[in-house]
Length: 323
Ligand code: DGY
Image (cartoon, rainbow, N blue to C red; front, side, top):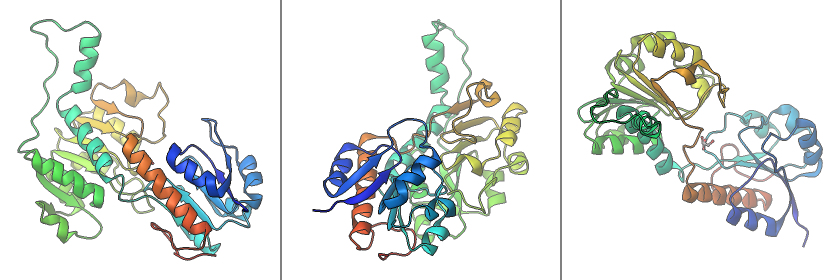
């Protein structure tokens, strides 16, 4: 049987990779550094499918080097690295992996809030350094029960975070482009963005990166927040102006930051944000559990194999039919 030609710019969980390899001849980039554009362009000459990773920009130039491409998939829900309009112009389907990562990402968002509120990582550093003695004076954290959580970006992950927050006794308010009446049943109240900034004790950002949300949090927004506020970003780094956040944390405009995503990403080891004591940064691990990454990889494989066979994709972002 003739196998479909597929290019992969990174790794994929083994069960999904094995399914793909049964039907496809795969060229896979296995190094940690991103595949150089010229090598990728060469590989794409005869490729029908592309499994892309978030460190690759899919734009008009790339698509012009891929005349036979029918389908592009990415094992992620976010797709800010993909020019969707260009894919559509070229008649190429693009599939992502929504839904399957909701709980893992909501868990991570809430973990960042809990860890910051209770200074878990500071405590661990303190103990590991051998500094823990009776009567030690590590700084206190805050209670979450009774506090107001503001969720910016109320999609499926936002709703899952809201449920967790309610279970911890928090009041939940949210801002979203469109009001989400169904999610209000779990006890989340809609507020305008500005009102949310002023009311929230903790803000969790979950909005996708787009033209509208790039730089959504800048100096003005941080100055509207409470000086006691906790700020958590689990969406994409460029939704936040990094210099403005640095300044807000240094000057006490807000109390604490926790970031799973940064701009740039990764932050260089000597970045001034990493020198602050009121910040926690994790390396973009929102969906990084074995179960969730496997489910994402399987959905990406479903999307790929459907697109190659001319069937609708289970999770398609643009036109949902074959070339
Ligand atoms: C996603 O699914 O978009 C995660 O952030 C992984 O990139």
